[in-house]
Image 1 (tube, one colour):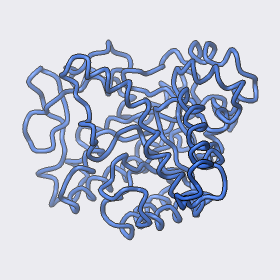
Image 2 (cartoon, rainbow, N blue to C red):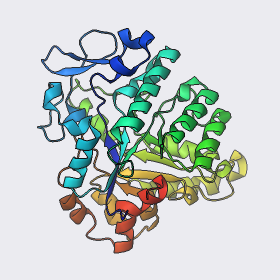
Image 3 (cartoon, one colour):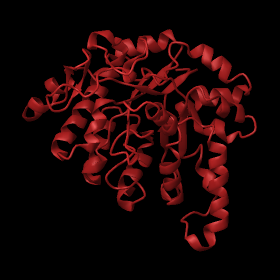
Image 4 (spheres, helix red, strand yellow):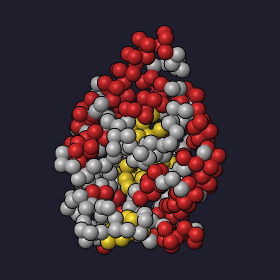
Length: 368
């Protein structure tokens, strides 16, 4: 297939009855489910009580942006139905989309490991068997890996999903054990051998040390959205400096929805500190940290005009950036992708444009 535009950061709102109908029977009475909230909208409940927040910002494609209050019937089917999602993408000139989970993310803070593994596996099976079924070449689902369950379990789930056709995987931003630990080498090795990237998404998954989403504090609510665009600095710098990519040169990590206007200064700082501090710091690298950008490290980008305008002066940006829509979230570029692309790419050459819009995604996710 000739891919022209790929969205490398789309989202799913899982079907309302997914877990109560498909989880192992022993867990169905406490499975996540959609219930009516106090504001009259619907939302996910994990304990049978009314949801703390109902559908809004995470499912507003095609609707007026609001924090919450939408009923299930009011969100468009492209949120939870693969055929409808595919139709929405095709109507906007998008040839393929990479799909991140929503409610399944809550398992990374759940202390019941057996239950949380059952939730993840139920989601992964539905994703690979049902959601992407209308066209697995254009719908690239990200099964969620149980990184908190030990590497034997985690790698086994990766292998199980590979057998079902997975092209890439989701890992949480805040696992119980830091990604800098050698504990993860079996996962890095398995993903590298399979040629499947591992995808982070801002601060999604696990306990955010900054407090997470604080929607009800005026100013702080939107400040958090701004701050999360810079959230890639911490995990990506740690992975590079601790030698993960030196040990696993075929491993690819994607950090979604972080844009790339900040990358030139980050590159400069990483390389400067490496040169100035390597004499005493025992950094496990023999190349500049920036060497790994576009080879092992990638980011997804939205309407980042600062980033796109820097591409002519820093061509490496075009090797590490991948276009995205963030459908169906509140900063979504859908259904006006063509207009955004025209404005964003007007100052970059055709080679860089092709890499960012589709070429890097084809290379990283193994699309064909």
